[in-house]
Amino acid sequence: MKTKRTYKTVDVEKVSLARLLAAIAGTVVVAIDVAKTAMVAGFADAAGKTQELVRFSHPRQTLVFVELLARLREAGRAVEVAMEPTGVYGNSLRFQLRARDFPVFQVDPKRVHDASSFLDGSPSQHDPKACTLIAFLHAQKLSKPWREKSSEERRARILLKEHQMHAAPEMDAYNELEALSAASWPELNELMSHDLRWPLELLSLYPSPSRVRQAPASEVKSLLVTVSRGRLSEETIARVLSSARTTAGERLDAEEEGFISKLCRIILEHRRQLDEVSERMRALVAAQPELSAVAETVGPAATTALFALVGNPSAYESAGALEKACGMTLKERSSGMKRGQLTLTKRGPAKVRQLLYLAALRLVRDEPLARAWYEARTAFKAWHQDQGGGRGHAQAAPCRLPRRARSALRRRKALRRATPRASAPAVPLRHDFERGLTPSSAPASLLHFATTRWSVGDLRQTP
Image (cartoon, rainbow, N blue to C red; front, side):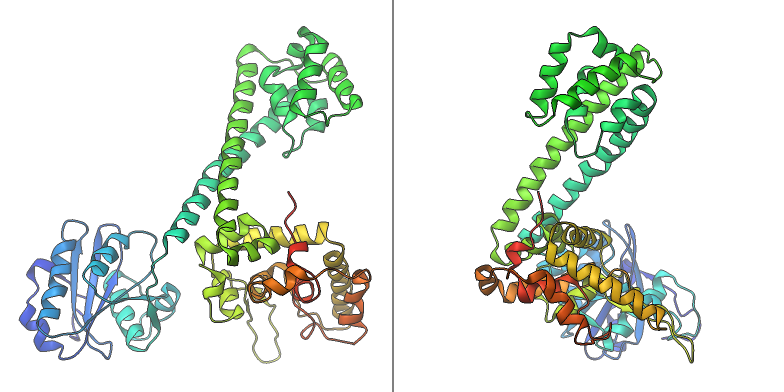
């Protein structure tokens, strides 16, 4: 590479093939910095030293760039392409490269970021420099072959996106409704909850207490019984009717009432769409035995997110690799006598961590064995911190759910035949604490204990 104007780029249509062939004798490494339109590619030798930086506009010059790589291969050079997984901007280019049988490798963007000072001693970052770093990292064997997603993984990703498309506006609309009802009908607001349907059905037809007072009481009562499927008690129904007559809320005009009614219909429609997507998620998971085993532990939604965002859990070489992909491993900052706090790397998809955390909360809430383990573990950690220790982390349960989910795949058949013992709640105390285990040697999650003594089918997600 030249010592002056190191990062000068050349338009792809002005590149000299003869100059490239003369500069690079063996394998040609093509490192691409992906962008929406202005892409940059570095042509480097097998040692990772960039000889030429080329710019091209996507999609106008994409096929010209691909044709240049084909001419290099026709001239007897082996061509390897390395690029970062930057969103979806590189998908069409990668498709063209795959169609022409060019090997494509993936380089972690975090490695590129951390290596910004390796070659020139400057922490500056820009597209041409990123190409030189990608080529260098690939030459150091710090890349991996790009694995294209299967059709099932792409389907799971679309289901996840569709779920998020309805979940976010549904929650926004409900929050707006909750605020309006607190001002206009505070007594009903006390009875409302996000998981209840009957308040929405009631407000969609009777958006204010005055509307309820104007309607026949038998008609309102019949509606509440119908939409609650008979689960609403007579006392609650009477409380709703009484509050409509004696409410302390402010009076609404016609426009405000219409807005509340429309808001309820929007929420109900979003929930109908969410139910439909959830059924399709369950069908996707049920069609694959390996995913079914994971869903028995963390639920279909978290399983779909795992499958869509980090791939099939059984495809990983180890449970630690799956934990790393989810961003659930720990990092430490310590020096000398200073011992830093352990925190999550959070390098993986945030959606996966969110759903695993919620799965851990369900286990603690609904399963006696999991709750006994958690309470005993928490009590021991508090005691250990009082004694001057306490390097444990608060998210111990969700952090190791990926490891337990992968273990469930290996023990699926045996665990389905297993049944909990009558003395199960007392086991965590004997297993972890009466034997005097330290926090570092004690199990790091609820499921570490649960999957070795309990059926994965019993660690289910509640409806």
